[in-house]
Amino acid sequence: MEADHLLHKRLYIFGRVQGVYYRASTQQEAERLALTGWVKNRADGSVEIEVHGPPGGVTALIAWCQHGPPGARVERVEVTECPEATCTGFQIVYR
Image (cartoon, rainbow, N blue to C red):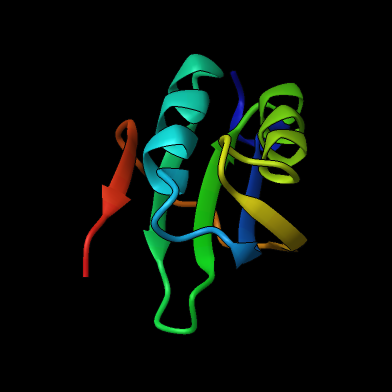
């Protein structure tokens, strides 16, 4: 797929999203959707995601992030553009 047909998004997920397998579940969902990028916990208790891929897959992941895995209580999701990046797979970033 041509690079100009890919979306590049950064997401910030707020709420009860740490300690509920949000990162691992996000990785599984992103891999299922054949997306690349990463997910990490932030010091303020939120989760940050960078995702790259076809519009349908990125849109599906953003929709999934609105509720996340069982046990998560998502209050809000902020989505911004991010620079194109060359990622291999979808990784969990540890501090």
